[in-house]
Length: 241
Image (cartoon, rainbow, N blue to C red; front, top):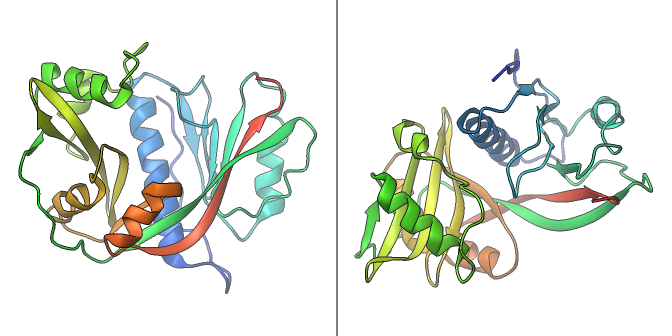
C-alpha cells in the first residue's frame, strides 16, 4: 500500500467543531487500515484520503478531511466522477457537488463522547480467532450469507483494532468494532438490538474519547448512550453505477 501521510493538521474555521475533524481523521485511519488489509493502494494528505484501487464494499473512493478549502478538495474530486462506481464522503457536507454525474446518497452525523455511560456487557466477548471472526461476519450479513470477506483474519493481528461480538447460541447476534487513533477511539460496524451502549462501554475501556458517525435509529441509540452530535457529513455516488 502506498500512502502519503499529512504533514500537519488542517486549519479550522469558526463553524467547524474540532471534534468532527477528529472523527473525520479517525475515519480516514479506518480507511487506511482497510486498504492495508485488502492490499489496496491509497494516498492521504491534508485535504482528503483517496483510494487508488477499487475500495471494499461500503467504502467510498474518497473521504474529505479539510472543511476550510473546498476549492482545493473539489480539484481533487474533479477527475473521479468518470470512474465506475465512484463515491465520496463529504466529511463536512460542504462541497458544491452539483456535477450531473453525481447523485446524493445518505446524510449522517459525526458523534463524540468523552466517556461512555455504564452498560451491561455480559455475553460480549472480544473476537480473537478466525472462526469467531467468520461467525461474527456471518451475523453482520444476516439474513443473507456473506458474498465476500470484509474482514480478513489479518485484522486480528492489528494492535489498532478491536472487534467484539455478543454470544448467541453457536454464533453472535450483535457486534461492533473500535479502531484506535492517537487522539480518539472510533466506533463502527455496530449491529444488533441494543448493541450501541455496550459496544461504547467496551470501547471506553481502551481509553480516549469516542467518535464515529451514525444516522437513523443508530443515531438515536448513540444519543441515548450520551453521545453529542458534532457535525454532518454526506455521501455522494456516481450517477452511473
